[in-house]
Image (cartoon, rainbow, N blue to C red; front, side, top):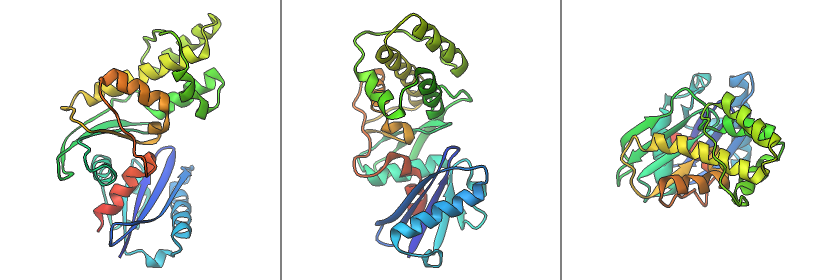
Length: 256
């Protein structure tokens, strides 16, 4: 048996293929285009190619993500909260608190020792605690995305950043740049602001160790460092599986 988990996000569409032995046999991760259904087909074909199979070999399709409606052929749908919890528990069995930060949304999920959902909290409408916020800040700093996180670790001083809204934060970054504040200090301040907002979401549930961060922003070492400081606790990132693929994995596992 082969199940395809499809996570249609606002920025990227991810696919994970698993077999009846709960083994991951194929994955894909492509940018979500204007035509979501076309994007889903492209993501599936890329995953099929990596697994050496065809669509006819798949027994079940499970969709999740904000664009799951773009998968009309899906056999079932899974909420993003459940997908995050299931996937996180599979890659990190000792996890009890899952923090997911994607392009447009962030959420915190608490699971028990069997991986069942105990509680969850979602972000409000503001994008300040998401990957889109990072994208906006990177444009203003004019640095490559992969350097943005490392730059924060080079900061020698703390620079306060009070703005939590993306629009106001952009103005604050421009002001700091005009004041000749070094970019590493600005990067650290930005990451601190993001971590503060994400931590406030996580605190709505009873945080328990282990804390696992998934989603695209989990790849940003500056954010992970800031979140550790903000929570005053160890924070983990999947070490053998791409953190942004975890919800698609959870969707696939739910179909077995």
